[in-house]
Image (cartoon, rainbow, N blue to C red; front, top):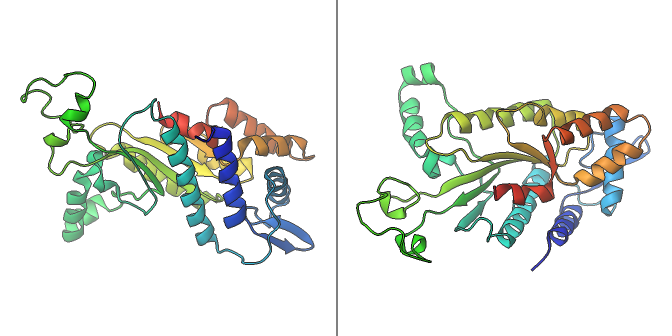
Length: 288
């Protein structure tokens, strides 16, 4: 079984191969997770790319939307392998999805489909309530309901047919028996202010519209500028935490670059304030 460090290295290797491409502007080379209009972004992104050993690929440029999709898939694969490796910490039957799955497919949010149908078919309700109830997260981690045999696997615990008849964890209590949304993960290859707002809006919908326990609400990004990460990470009440795909490398680069003191200060504030963590922290946090 691969260690967490090995999985992290494989994750970065695949990102370097599949997503990262280099471009040149005004004689300056930069990777495609940098903002070519920001000197700080160029310097930091180049530094992170060097720390991770990304190859300088200039051919086969990738559109931003394609880069984002690949980033989602590779991040989901990393989470799947890492979380499976610690399944003894959080036993269950797990699903990992990246196909823009609607939250109405899960137990806590199944009622939203009926509401969405009513709003769509009734103009007055649409005017009064609006739309946007059904969020489609970039990455979903879901847990399947359990059978009596699974719960009684080590010893008889459920000993009567008329006990625990309402909990959705028992698949026999619901028809259909829907999986539970364990984590909703937003993936942002880079961050712009409008994207930050969309992530927060989706998070608030997940919080307000659930019936049952709240899933983990997380975000993962490769954005090189701490100030832009802050637009997503600062504050509490919506996102659990933001995870950077290479936080250690980002911290090292920012600390070494002259003229990046404000970026470094913001980065440390987010880390010390428990608002920003490394991608390697994410699977362990899912076990909480």
